[in-house]
View 1 (cartoon, rainbow, N blue to C red):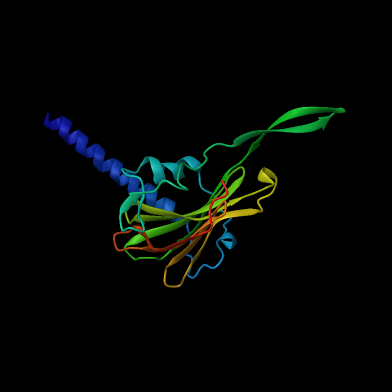
View 2: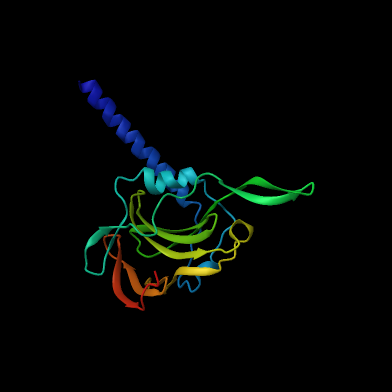
Length: 222
């Protein structure tokens, strides 16, 4: 019985050490970005991340889903603009002319997960910006971790659509956009089919993004 308990403890210990090493190596992919950030779309990098590795660190290896402090001061799980990143190429079909005939051609779009950078919001935490270029959408997420790689909170900084889809990375319709001030405030705006939401987020001492201010204008068309 003692042997089984010891083996279990050793397994937990080594898994913890491996997770720490994986997170440290993951963070090395992110260069430091200084604040303020005025235009999220201008942030880019030539490097990319492996989709499975990113999902392991951000989702699968986590005990809890990320949370934030809502406008009522309540700690709540994040549901909107949150989910696994694409790991495999996206299969789609086009109609092309060949030998004077129109045929259906199978193609694949290679999704990109880009390590944009690390920003200093609080010296006790690690905050990373990740960009994802999927089949029709481009988005940027700001993740906040403990120093040992535990995900605490995340904010979608940008979410846009691309009319040209796989043919062009130019964003043609913006749903979410943000700025980050020199004082580390996240000035966030969402246009959800005519209903506009204006928020100010700030990272609190416990490592969660907190809604400091919120205002809504208009109404959704759908």
